[in-house]
Length: 152
Image 1 (tube, helix red, strand yellow):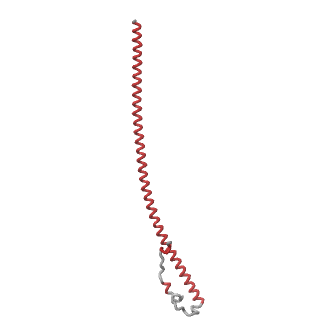
Image 2 (cartoon, helix red, strand yellow):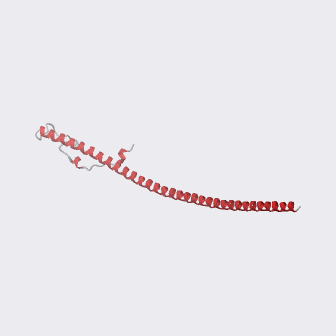
Image 3 (cartoon, one colour):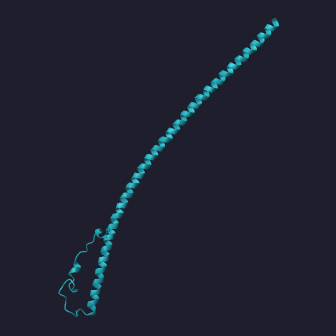
């Protein structure tokens, strides 16, 4: 009996050692599980922080790009207005060039006519002084042109 009780005691202590090592193993696994859980939580927190920082950076970039876009749009509008003003001035100058060219051509024709007739007219001067080439007072009038005549 003693041997059976010794075996029992010996196997009981083996069982006790086995259950003690199983408890230690479980405790060790639980500890590792807790460490992993804490590590995962910390990693998730860092990931959320990175995402938030990235989102904040993108929001700041959008604000900056909108500001630049508004500045460019303002600059384009100002440049367009300057272009339209210069285009109107050019139209006026073109009209004046046309009028001056026409007057110059008329004066050259008068000079050619007078040169051909040695300064004398074969006919009597017309009663209308405006049509009389010798009366050139109409040539001293200022040239007036505006952009209004070019609008459709």
